[in-house]
Image: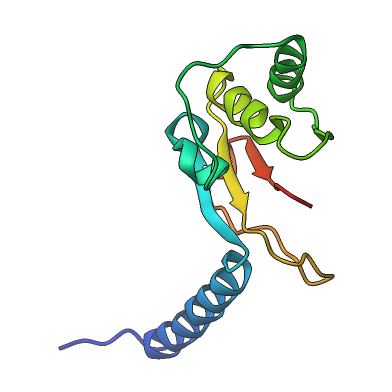
Length: 134
């Protein structure tokens, strides 16, 4: 049986690198409930949580503006009173965008200085990070 010199060392290094990447992946992803899912595949309960979801939605002017901003790859901040429909507006905008975005939803955690975005190896896809109730 022939053995390539140095292959054992290369495998050992590769195993250590993979272990480091896994630890970093777990550390970053503790903040998220959904990590990089297609926008059209997100279920209402993932964004709306305990709020009641009704299939009918009356689209308002600001909904079109949110969708346009997302399609133009602009940042969007939705500000308003409690229970006015901010999260639902964001959900409807995510469902209506035409580009294949992937979305990550941040858990309601205290975002500290060490807050990191989740790792995503699909670099070519446009990404949206959804943060609710800041």
